[in-house]
Image (cartoon, helix red, strand yellow):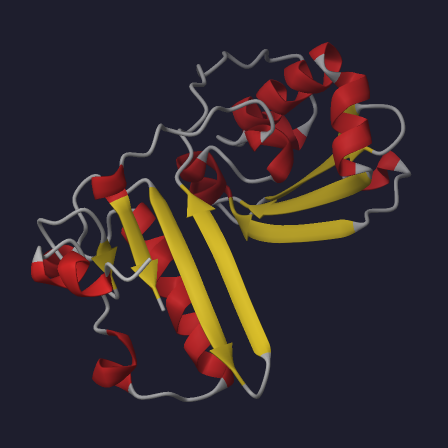
Length: 205
């Protein structure tokens, strides 16, 4: 307590110090558009963790903290962690398959989710209790649909006629899904986050 002055004098609140506070410049740099302030903080921290901030990038950022308050007693604090992408291997497709989803790059992502559901079915169903639907657009105009059942049976079904009703539907491009490797909470469930050092923590307040 009472060490804020020393903290700032040491330069621990900026680049080269222990933490980097407001790498975006904070409200002094962009004003305070009420509700948009929280979204701007979220955007900045996500960009930092993706290493997409160019000159204002925090080196080796792995953890970010968001702090937002106002409108009387409203206060929000959020923590963001960088996850390692799934290490997937492309599998060869058989000519006998008539499932259009097998021709998508992201099929290997769902095969990995399928494997984890098989190995950790009870744990993952207890954790997520939902059915996710993914509608992916291929580069050639094709559309693939996957249903991840983390609510009852712990399976991954492909195609429009699965008979499942999704609790959450996600639409994205096949290439984006494959590139991210982590399209759902399900595929992150067993991935350990990178260890965070104090120097890698950025904050937006």
